[in-house]
Image (cartoon, rainbow, N blue to C red; front, side, top):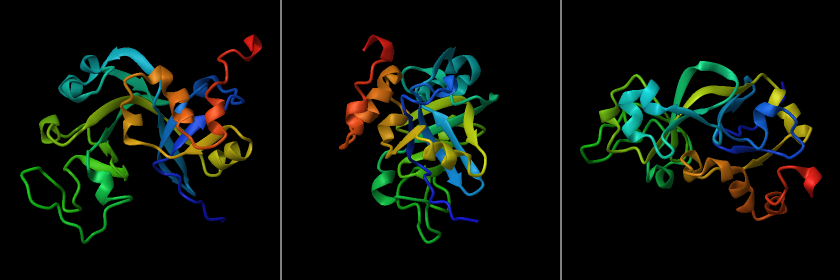
Length: 210
C-alpha cells in the first residue's frame, strides 16, 4: 500500500468547484489522517443550538458564538470538543514524546505532559474529553468549541478528492478553532495565504453575478 503523508492538524478549504452542499465554502480541521482514512470537523457551520442547551457544564468555557457547530454529516448525535491550550505550540509541534514531563506548577497534567482531559492533535490544538470535569481544564483552555457530528473519509477517499481539486490544503492556526466570525472564516483563511490562493478569497458567492 502506498504510504499516506499525514495531513493531521491542517485545514481543508473547499474550492469553489466543490459541489457537495455539505461542504460548500467549508473549512475543515483534520483531526486524524492516515492510510485508514480521515476525520475532521467543519469550523464554520454554527447551529442555533447553544452549548448550554446540550452540555451546560461546558457552556462557560465555549468561545463566542457560544453555540454548537455542525462538524459534518456523520454521527450528528455525537459531540466532539476541540480546544486550544495557549503556549503548547511553542514546545510541541506534534504528539508528545514519552520523555516529556509536565513541568512545575499547579495545573493538572498527564504523564505525557499534556493537561488532563485534553489530547494533542497538532501544536496547541487538541481534543477535549467531554466526560471529564470542566473545572479540571478551566484554567488551561484558551478556547473551546463543541461540534455535533464530524466529517469522515474512507481509505483513499480524501486523496481522490484532493486529486480532483475539491480542496485546498493549508496550515491551520490556533485562532481558526474559535473564530468569532465563522461566516468569514473561508475568506479569511484564503486571504492570509502567500500564494495565488489569496485571490480565491474574492470569488463571489454566486459566480453568475460576477
